[in-house]
Image (cartoon, rainbow over all chains, first blue to last red; front, side, top):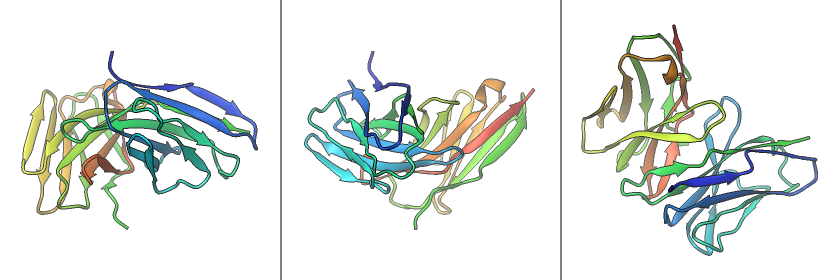
Length: 112
Length: 110
C-alpha cells in the first residue's frame, strides 16, 4: 500500500527531554512537510524539505529540528527548547500531479 | 499577513445540504483543495479544483470557485452523521507548498 506512516501514534515525555517523531512515505514524493496542530486551530508549518539533504524553516521552527537523509524519511525532533511541545503533529508529502499533499495519521505528543 | 479564511462552525440536520465557505488569498494559486479531518486523524484529501474552473462535482460534493472574489465553497448534498468532521480549505503556492485555513467544524444532527 502506498502512503505515509507516522509513529508512534501517542508519545509521552517528561519536560526537558528531546523526542523524535518518525515519518516515512513510499509515494516517491520529493517534498515532505511537518505541521503542528493545536486544539481548535488550523495547521502551522514547522519545517519542509523539497529535496533530499535540504530543508527549510517554516513559520514556527524554533525548538524543532529535522533531517532529510533519505527521500522516504523526514524525522522531526522536538527539543527541550520548545516551550509548549504538547500538540498533534502531522507529516505530509507533496509532489502529486495536482500539487496536493498527502497526510499521515499524526502523532499526539504530550509533555509533562 | 495573508490568511485563508473560513468560518469556524457549521451545524446542519441530517439529510440537509451543507455549504462550507472559504476565502483565499493568492489569485495566482493554481489549485485549491478541500480536506476532511476526523477526530484524532490526519487530513484526507476530498477534492481539488483547478483555478480556471468554476465548478467541480464529485458524487455528493460540489465545489464552486469564484476567482474574481477569491471565494471557494464546498457543498455536501444529503449530509450524513458520518460527514461530521473538520473541513480545511487550502490553496497551492510555490508549486508544492500549501496555505491552509483554520478549518470549519461541521456538526450533523440526527
